[in-house]
Length: 123
Length: 132
Image (cartoon, rainbow over all chains, first blue to last red; front, side, top):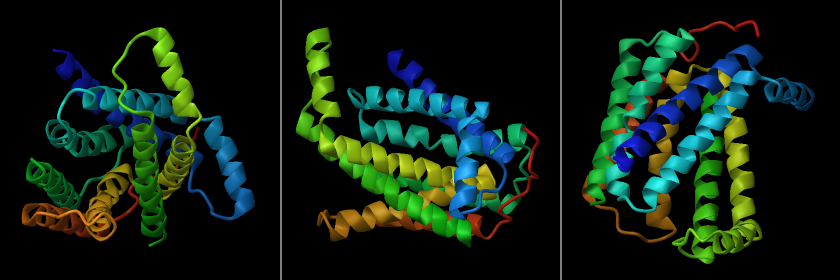
């Protein structure tokens, strides 16, 4: 029960954190690497509520992850977190309005399959 | 192209940051108490360990570069693209730590690389800037 809750918290919070970060950066706009403009962009980023919320969700997912690792097996936890490749992409489509072409789905599913194979190989 | 370069530097920072945190936490030792006084002692050890600070600094750089990449490209592009960190991990483990890498792990890494290669041929940005 504790494991299931931590896993849901890990996957949901990491996806939410990523989606909120991306939403914040959509508002900040394309960042230039020119030092002065970069500083100005960092100022806008520090004041963006979506980025602030995103960092908090990512921190919660990080703590869920290390709590899980303190007693569960890495080879159990990591393949399950590979689900987040799909939840992130679905979130990007429905919350951020990104257009996911079939080729991007294919590549994303291959990445997820590869991560699962690697963790099974570590058993 | 610049998105891929920034993501590459970001992933290098992330791998380095994880190594520093692991090294720092191994120096602190296993955390197996919930006694507040003991936890406080451990907390002091954690935050006076130079590897922990190096790890936190490197991971902050990772997150900033990751956000810069997100300002240029879709989340659904950036997330799978960062998976090439798995190749970097396998190569570092093999070359620096001389760990044996099983054929199945190489196969999984190749599948990930194929996926990253396919994603990187897609349109990076499909949304417009949004008003704050």
